[in-house]
Structure formats: C-alpha cells, structure tokens
Length: 169
Image 1: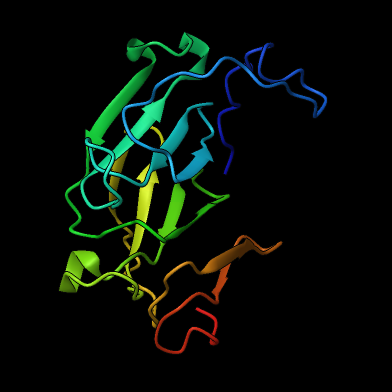
Image 2: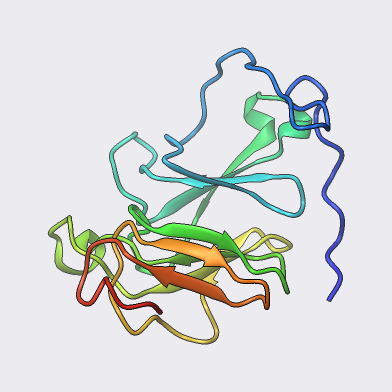
C-alpha cells in the first residue's frame, strides 16, 4: 500500500536534513505525555484530561503545526473506547499509516492506577478518530510496554508492567 506523503515541514521547526531548533513555548489544550507524528504531518498527543489531570481516558489532541501554535491549530477530541491510554505505547502501522496504541493504565477499568491492560487501539489519521483495533486486543497486559516495527510490517510488543510482560505480543 502507498501512503500519502506528509505535508511539508515547517522550516522553523525542521530544516529537512535532521536538524531542528527550539521554538517559542505555547499552551496546548492537554499536557502531551504521549505524542506521535502522523502521515498527514499532524501531531497526535494525549496524557491528561481537559484540566491537566493525569489520564488518557477521554481526550486526545491533534495539532496541525503548519497552522502555527494558536488555538485554531489544535483540536481536542473525545474518544469513546473506555480505555485509559495513559502509560501506553505508540507505533505506526506501515500498511495503513494509522497509529497503533497498545496497553494503558488499569485506572480506566478498575479505578486503581499502575497496572497494565491488553487493549489495542488505533488512531485513524484520515478520520482523526481513535477506536478499538479491528484485530482485537493483545494476549497480555502492558503498562509502559515497548513496540518495535519489524521489517515485514508486524509490530513486536514486549515489556512494561503487567501479567506476563516478559512475553511478546
């Protein structure tokens, strides 16, 4: 499958040869604990609620940095998956360009934080929507797991905290 090329990077933030620079600080809607550059050139982030409290349960933000740093450049969206994505891991599905979000925090399931979940979500970069992955959940719970894209396109997930975290998914 062929992915659409990303938008041209903003020259102030990135010069195209691997060198960037720090820009002026600005406020975001959420505190971006987890962030990923999507194929559209937008930044997906999550980690807190709308009041800055730690959790990735309901909201995520999409920032179009080509529109600058003002409020019109960012969109806070609600996801309805009932998964607390805080403490999850992200990787890009090379076949779809979607962001795969694996694991998370048990706070969304049990009310107690600090344990892993086996949920697998995907952020559809074309629709700006987070939803459950169509292939289902992982076999094992993950809290701060790690993922690696393999040469054949599969995504290897291991580690973190949870039941059988030493076994790959």
